[in-house]
Image 1 (spheres, rainbow, N blue to C red):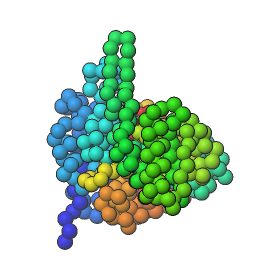
Image 2: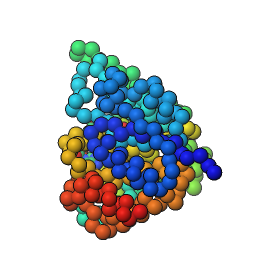
Image 3: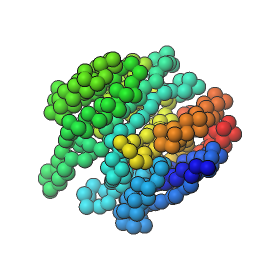
Image 4: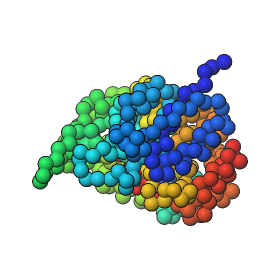
Length: 343
Ligand code: NAD
Ligand code: IPM
Ligand code: MN
């Protein structure tokens, strides 16, 4: 008999714990997993003074996969650079596990076409993947702050661009749209050069285009179906993926997988801790469920279990399930029950 997969659970803050609880229940229905839960983000700051303790990072390294809710909230917000922030825990975890590739699939469910602000005929057939570089760029460059000045350095190396470009080309079915700001940024000009080289030397059979980020933001709404894989740097990927979420009807629908060259991946919804609705029991748990499905598939090699989760979500939506973010009145627990019933 094979050993039960060992999953580190980091519910985090705000709606994180509210959507994590039913996700663990869902996973328990699918197999026997070993769960190890830890405080993370703001909850860890409150208990230990830091958002990510060495113990939690070590536990994550030992795990087969890490499932994460969301971190952050007004309780820990501050413009004081000396104060610990929940988000630093997330960045530390990504960097600590060297999760350079963040995959954010945007595949709207037909049942939700009406929930999107875009017209159904525009959405129909959209099936794209944002491949976001996750451990470099302006997020991780030197930060400085004095009384009358602040700076964040944006830096990329050739090796960092090469490996994320390879992830994108390997994930593409037809086309990679590499998004940059090469008309202004030096990092983007290096990005474009390296993507061109990786394409011509290693993936000439895949179509490639280079799109400036402002235009890409517009095209994403004008013609989302055009995109197959969107390859982009850390910050552009952060922004474009929240925008792309609205093609699916809600940020509460978008899952993600963060992967490195080896070792465990982190699986988390694209959305945050939603302080405005936290504690009310109305958060949409589906992005979290779909992130668990990505964990089953990409992290644990359990493709049929992953497919079972996806089809349960499909059926629940077809049957009319809608949380408030999708225009309905289902609660988190009600929505979770419907999905579990369809499993
Ligand atoms: P957010 O994604 O938390 O919320 C944006 C809007 O979307 C809110 O109106 C919220 O109610 C709604 N929303 C988000 N998820 C939802 C869900 N599952 N169901 C229903 N509605 C949902 O973004 P924000 O408000 O800008 O950030 C809040 C906090 O979360 C900040 O501290 C931010 O740093 C943090 N954050 C964390 C992560 C993460 O942990 N991965 C991601 C993004 C933001
Ligand atoms: C995300 C979040 C994080 C990011 C924040 C909370 C650090 O917005 O995962 O999209 O910017 O990467
Ligand atoms: Mn984000």
